[in-house]
Amino acid sequence: MKCPICESTRHQPSFQYHEPPQGEVRYPLEGKYFREYSLCETCGHYFSSFRWPKNSVYEGTYVESTYKGIEGIRNTYSRIRALPPERSDNTGRVNYICDHFRQAGNEDFGALSLLDIGAGLGVFPAGMKEKGWKSHALDPDSLACRHMQEDLGIEVFQGDFFAAKIPGKFDLVSFNKVLEHVEDPVEMLRLAKPLLKKGGLVYLELPDGEGAAKESQDREEFFIDHLHVFSASSYSVCADRAGFQLIKLERIREPSTKYTLRGFLAEA
Ligand SMILES: [Zn+2]
Image 1 (cartoon, rainbow, N blue to C red):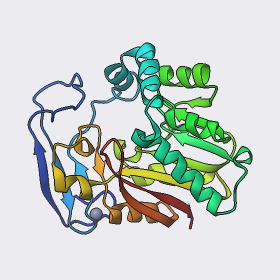
Image 2 (image 1 turned 180 degrees about the horizontal axis):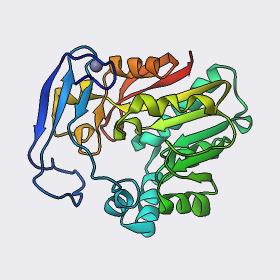
Image 3 (image 1 turned 60 degrees about the vertical axis):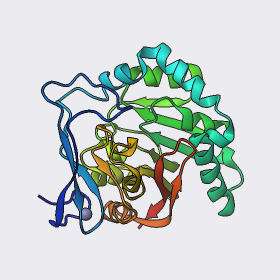
Image 4 (image 1 turned 45 degrees about the vertical axis):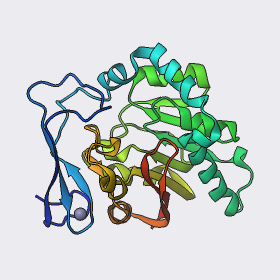
């Protein structure tokens, strides 16, 4: 078996889980709980042995288990948006992105369009919309899409990104903690290329396994829904194999305590 990111065969078993770590959502899974990450010795990437049962997650189960329906979505959304700026991961993200565009000479956000992939509650596209951006969002979940469209006035595309036909091109396509959930992150990232306007950028945010592993294997970066946990090196290799060049990458500790890698990619 190869590392799914750099294709090296040099990897070894790493963290094992015989029960859900504290704080992990209890998904209705059959059989005994066991999963394990392998650690790639070449690029430092963690990849999981766990696979979801077919046709289960992200099409109902995920949102139902995590947020308990549309009222749960609205309540969670309101709670997150009410966080003071210094405690909000989302405020940090919105400011980081807007600063990057401002530094590149793009002050007029009203002229810029965003497509957020796997938008979930819509906290990020709503924050960008407040800064003036034309925000669009894609999510597979019908309740999440209803909430974004009806409550937040965001233009939504409902569907699976791997199958979706999205009209138009965008100045920014964002993946906020999305690629770690899919089996093939390289392929998912590659699909963003035709969605970019000329000179457009991808904003890519991923869990930082190198930072988190120093603290504990039971941290949220290693929860069950993360099939991949990245390193600075695997972040960069993933971008490269998907046909992008890395133009910025940084490692941060977010207000929520998450260990995170974030940066920008341009077409190679
Ligand atoms: Zn690797």
